[in-house]
Length: 227
Image (cartoon, rainbow, N blue to C red):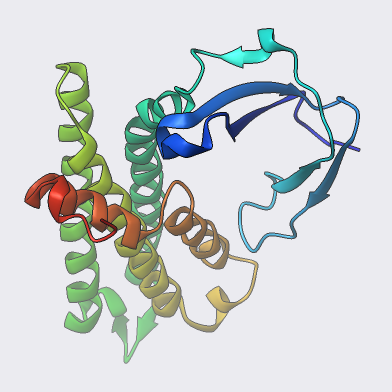
C-alpha cells in the first residue's frame, strides 16, 4: 500500500531505437492495478520516505501522457538544472547553520583556562570552511541570476551540484569533531545533518556525472567520455 504519493511520474521508452530521444513521460495514479511498492530504510532524510514500485502489465490511458510523445527526457532535463542549484543551496545552508553553532560553542568551551575559539587550529578550520561555503553560495546565486536572465545554466548548475554537498559534508564533519564526544551522539544535530547532506551527493546525479556535464560544456559534446 502506498504511503504518501497519489501519482507517480513515469519515464518509459516509447521508441527504444531513438535512445534518449524516444522517452516519454506519464502520470501514473498510485492506486492503479498491478502496481506493487517497497520502501527504503534510508540513512538520512528519514522523515521523507523513498521507495520503489513495480509495474506488472499496467495500462496507462493516453491522456496521462505528459507533454509530447518521445519528449519526456527533455521534460525532466528542463527542471534538473534548477533543482540542482536549489539542492546545492540547501547543503550550504545546513553547513552554515552548523558553522554558526560551532562558533558560539567555541566561545563557551574552555580548555587550558581559555575558550577554544582562541586556538588557531580551531579558527583556521572555521575560516577555511566559511571561505569555501561563501564561494559556493555565490556560484549558486550567480546560477540563479543567469536563469532569471534566460541564459543557459547547465554548466554552473552541475558545478554547484558536485561541489556544495562535498564541502558541506566536510564542514559539518569538522563541526562535529570540534564539539567532541557530545556531538558523536544523536543529542546534537550534526550526525543527522551529515547523513542528510550525503544523500544530496547522490540525488539528481553524482559528482562524477556532474563533472562529465561540466566537461561536455567546456570541451564540447564531441569529447564526452561516453561517446
